[in-house]
Image (cartoon, rainbow, N blue to C red; front, side, top):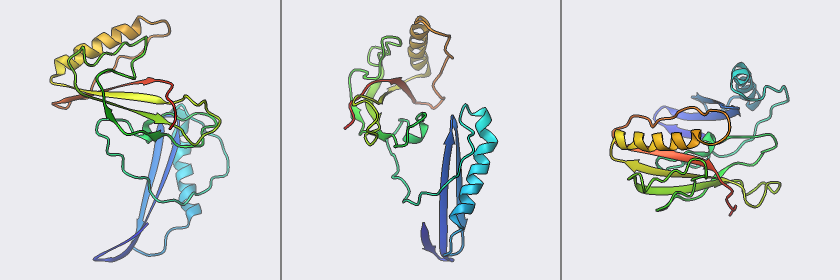
Length: 202
């Protein structure tokens, strides 16, 4: 990307790499209209990822790396929601996750039989939900995706009581113990609850 300000022409290049839970981002800005060679920037990004892939539950495969030149993605301004970069990747997935528009809701479409997370019953307000799908991958089932619900609580105590009930419900399900999770500490609480859900791609 090139832009001009009072000091002249600038070139900005960005690379993003992901392996497991690690995301490596390099932003290179030069005060010149001539960009750095793509191969050099890709090599730098690959070297950075190899330093962390072993501890990120990801893949450390050695393979030739290439550059895909494309405009930067649009800004996701859905407040309180995850974005595509937060979502898991898995072997063979080459197409991007795509978010739907968020909609107001009364029920929790992301609730599962295990967590039984009922935002409305817990006193949450301004409930909204949206889904992530992979519409361009023809190998996936027609119903495949993930839905997230966001609700706002008026107090730390109300949010904690809700999370305690969900935590107890999840621990009552079969399977290995799951880590306890809490909301972050802003004054007005926004507590996302995410669950895998088969959602029709649009």
